[in-house]
Length: 332
Length: 267
Image (cartoon, rainbow over all chains, first blue to last red; front, side):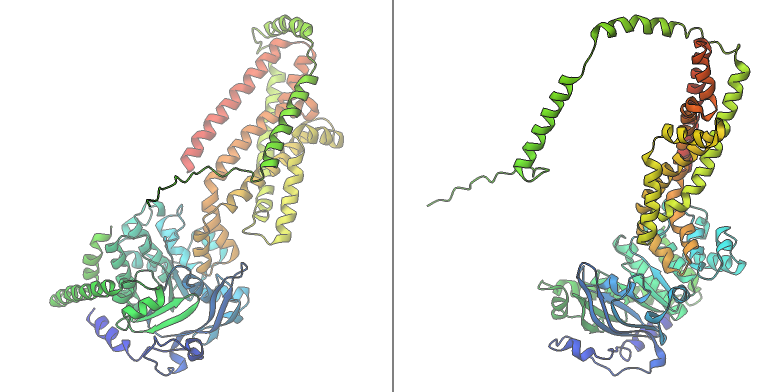
């Protein structure tokens, strides 16, 4: 955990990156103050180039997005409803076909792949959904193992005869989120927080390099929301994953993300640190309102968060897993 | 000067906006109905004469005679049950690929239209019409009945399967697709769990329908208990016919009860 803390801080400044052509799309907007040159391309987990999505109805959901997410970065995508957040992450694994533009995962062009190659690349991107999107009539274990479908053949998956290594990993992940005793429960018997933790396991058992997270906390209570966000960030840290997290809740985004990108009407209007998210920036993204309170409350929260972390640091002997158990105790 | 708030009125918007069309349709329906009822000829003398005759006819059903024609009844039942089970199984097996093809969210447009076409054709003919056709093609007997019921099952089950697939929760399907699953795995993990309980229930419901239809199909030469029933009527052995009707009612009720129980259990 302590390493988590220091890493987060260290990584906050040098990793704020803008994609090529950013200046064009940003012309006239003076929101982004911290522009830093592009990183070494080898360390870019995800790169979007002039990504455009126009729906059949004529709506321009994305208007030429350029974005680079470096290795190991947790990036929050904020913005009002209809800004194109969901479309953006769905264009990455092509659940939504982009109209034009290119998407690269580790310098492999996803937008150039054919149908069968697409399945191969989707395995490398874990996705976590709003409202969990678990298959409700399948058991917890089946839901988790469905994350391995890209790796096993049809008959194996049909007979539910997954390799022992997959089953071991499924139990390890379920144990990690405190749900191993629920493995034979049907998904619809679980509470919201539990379901989202199963959703996280399903994404992680894919052994992904990138997590695409779509409104993970939209249907959870405030406490569970924080626990889920904390879990996602911890797991990203443990496994050195990059993550793109769509999130409504500005405070949660500021608490957990290393970088915040603000989307408005299909365009990036902010790209920078959580601290840089001032009242003016929020007005820029969401429109005129009194944002001071949102920011103040966040600062209070941040202090209490740090206190919690300090308490945990006190007990040296405790294992990481036990800490998690404490943190997740309120979830079940 | 004080402004007086004028109360704003509100009325539920009508189903049909154009008031001429709205009233015109209502008027046309009323006129047609009056004319249709006016031209219906009812011979009340014959109705009066028919009622006591019907009473005598019904009286001959009692007491039902299960024993004098028992071997024939048993054979007919056997045929009917064979026909019911085989046609349900075969019909459902054929309707699964057609139903998948007829689901808008699964199949590309040409496949969708083709499969919907098959379903529309098999649904547009009543079982009796198909049965007459099949008897002419393959001769009297339960094979014609089996074919008839299979075709009818495809139309029924395929359509309901397609509609059930169109009603699934798309987010669950999307989530499984995002794992990199291939098409068959995606069907097996996201579509099948969502539709299976209802489809098991509908399969049992169809079994029940097919048994009842097997009696009708038999009357036009498709074999089974219907043929036995028809023979009983032709010979004026109405007490045996009553026994057959009671057996049909009993079996239908038993299947109905079991299918209700199983449906509750699979949910």
